[in-house]
Image (cartoon, rainbow, N blue to C red; front, top):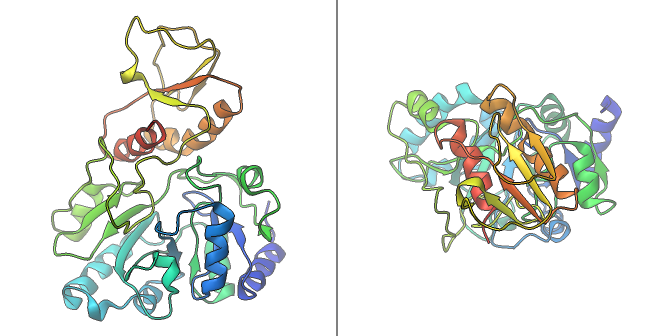
Length: 328
């Protein structure tokens, strides 16, 4: 586990333009100084990430959000500032907002665009790292692009090996799926990527309607405003299919794994299975989701069949990840 010395070393490495993997409450991030274009370029290189897929910037305080975003260029700066004040009750936490980019943020963080996704993470290690570093950290998930996101330090080691400068081990991530991304670029706030902060919560906090994405049929927009919008994402090397796509008399390959939420009993032979939450708790399901997918991916299977749930509340974010992982 991490020590204060690890965090101090991580802050020093970031200041030198180096790459540091660190824990957040959602997944482990691969961090670089968000003001340093060369450091950010190395993030894209190490991950094999498409250059049109933007990164999320992590900061320590709500005032930092105003510093690294240019709210004066918003559609209505007064309304946007009011909404940020309301959303501050959800920070630190698994919520990112999209706003016009401030001039201090490197343009390649935003994939050449003019907006930036930004949030305040809840993990104490991430917050201490941000405090000691004293600047914004651009950090996508610390894994190879499009693969299953890492929720432990070992996952980072497995994915990136010795290609980065430091991995800070903060234990397993409590939330287990990436942050909700909320666009504040228009009068109606719009969720671009669902996460643990649900549309119902956001509507209640903001006191207005919030537009949800159609994640049952993900497609790639021409311009990616946020991470998590690629049609295929979060995918193990082993093919994935939803249980709802398996017909009763369909012939399946010899070695099939099953990812079970709680009490599903597959009606086909299963080589290996993982149960995410015996009690059917969606928070527990989300926390274990990526680790279980990685375990099944390492089991020499021909296919992984995954359970499903109603895309409501946290279930919307879980199904978003599984639908994208199963995209062919």
